[in-house]
Length: 389
Image (tube, rainbow, N blue to C red; front, side):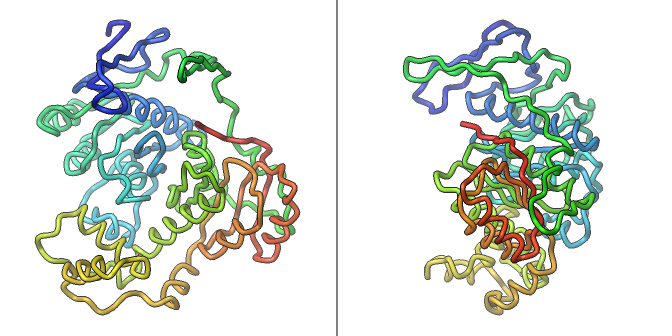
């Protein structure tokens, strides 16, 4: 590729012409399509996220990016029957890399619509066939099987963006940004996120079992690539709720935990057994299930429309049904900066959170620690802030 490439347009269509330039060597090759400004922001963030997950957990990793933050991130664990039904993949034979992306996308099925995909391993035919049916703008990966390329090149009328990342490309140690006539520079954030983040528990209970460590690494690494303020909830090797870009930390926690609640409730028998009008496409079914779960938040017109889409309507989930179902799960939560008030813990415990990571450093650290002890939550302070702007 040349030193500068033309982009379809900038952040908005009226910001044209727009270009991208390589600081040194290009960290990717364009195999198909023409990128846009936001495509490249999502591609580079998502590629670095999955590469870091792969290094930390030594299994295939994937991310689903929207508007410069992950809609989801995950590693390639097998997908159980109930979760497969919720994701509508029960009839698919998924490879580990395909399972990683299905999980990443499934963490927020509504937000992932029109995403940019990233995977840490070579894209195989299993993943390509899944992607072929999804609404997605592009993908970045370290390589592609010939059959996978053939499938993906036909997507979006031949315009699907396919980038091949170079894992060996040198990454500059300094990053800069031009902003309204000034240039900002700083060292690139490469501080290691590993098992040392569990070394400073401050609660009465201190145990971090292996599955908890895995899920907290997924949640915390995802935060490094999420617009701040941000809070990440994870379970079963994937992000299940991410609250990003809020000015108030409690709003991040409410967003993240609300999404986590919906992920858990999507696997409830009554939700899985919903029958929809045959005209509804898969994305519409995902949206309808989310509305069904969020019944108390809907307006009357939304409720009427939802009821018209469900063939076997039998009423919404009760509060008792919700609490009982969520209480069967175990989730973990990570903050990109300190928790200023205990209200974050109060909200988290209602979403089955058993373990929390946060940098610490607030004058209210003792209050949040007391709250964790009250609920039997294990919390450690990492001392590592993960802001991203």
